[in-house]
Image (tube, helix red, strand yellow):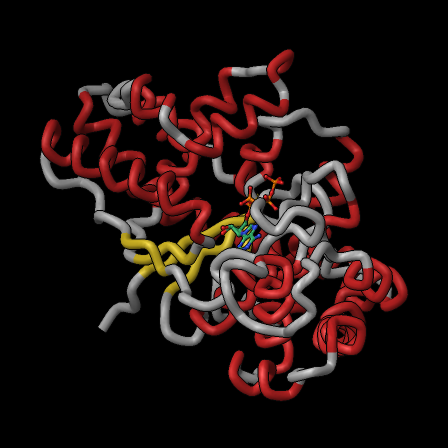
Length: 330
Ligand code: AQP
């Protein structure tokens, strides 16, 4: 039986955070065993906010190396760079023609990002979710592993697929989100009401996958908590709750075990230990990353082969779409 298709991507818009790792990449690794997975580095998405070209190039390779260092295997899944597969942009145009401005206006990420950059409110930021829908629908994707923050965009992809299918006949699979219950949303260390984000201006708000041990210790020490002073998992103590989630993911210990372990011990010791589990969890990834970055030829081979495989699948869908909307075959 053919394996079901999974698609997901990460933007090379800065160094990746442990939010990206816990909410996305860690999960990608488990899925590659069971599904036909396409994991993309979405550079076309990244330029919806201004990027410095040389940093974008560096960050794109960095995401690929982190994918590999985290355990993604190019023999088991397809790893590629979005701008290497033209069909993403081409399908976006067709989907734009059936997207409603009103629905795009309601996208939380657009509202949040446009607040941050009012003077640079570009059209691509507005149509970002349509490009994301094209990414997903091109591969006849069944499941999309994303963090909770991306659920609304996935809903749009489903709506567009259904709209197209109704208007032009059955063409796209309707994708489902795969959101893990635990660690679906890692929060900012400085403001635990906001999600941890790689483009946050305050670098103390996030931990990067590639942060050195001392930096991790310092950032966790400075993490905003509360004056209650007890390591308890609840919504009155969002900072502590977030650190407990992080501790739990990296150590494998349950929340109950962590609560019991730190009963009566205060935040100092707890924060020190959170830092140590994060450091030792990231160490093997950082080591493999360093080795991979010394081997640019290998990285190039991986993304070239990935693009070839992705192109093959994407063109099949795009041809069908072009035919259905009435474009004459070339
Ligand atoms: N804080 C988070 N907790 C859990 N999951 C997260 N993801 C991102 N932040 C968290 C998940 O990571 C995947 C890739 O995200 P992305 O880089 O494509 O874009 P994003 O969601 O916009 O992530 P950032 O870090 O906030 O990027 P910027 O700052 O550039 O916008 C997605 O599956 C996402 O859910």
